[in-house]
Image (cartoon, rainbow, N blue to C red; front, side, top):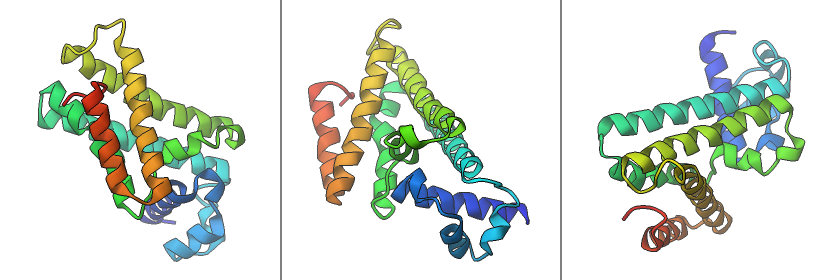
Length: 187
């Protein structure tokens, strides 16, 4: 199987996990989506756990790259913090999907340990980035930045969850605006 088929499987698994979580990953459905036989998926991913691990790892790696790119576009940490919710909004714009790792976090009791580790890494990457920018922007000192970063991460993920449950992206926007008005996010 070619690397392009592997990438297509990962892309299909990402879309599925964003819509139905880890529990929704099914090799037969993924094969139909990609246009291959289900048995072909096993060539690169011998188990659902290995597929889930790979897709969660790719998701946090892609997110880390997006966060780095955002910071490279503008060195202004306040502007980056204002833009941070846009990443979560994009999932909602894509057929009312959710952040893959937020969805999988809700399934933590049923996740294999390797998948849990990647999901936790996603949160760690986001919190570390937010913390670094909060300090750089002078919005939190180094002792308080982790706590505020976790609050921002949890709040943005929660806004996404509420909006998804109502299939209403404007609800996400108004919730993010309320976080800005309350001072959690910069205006």
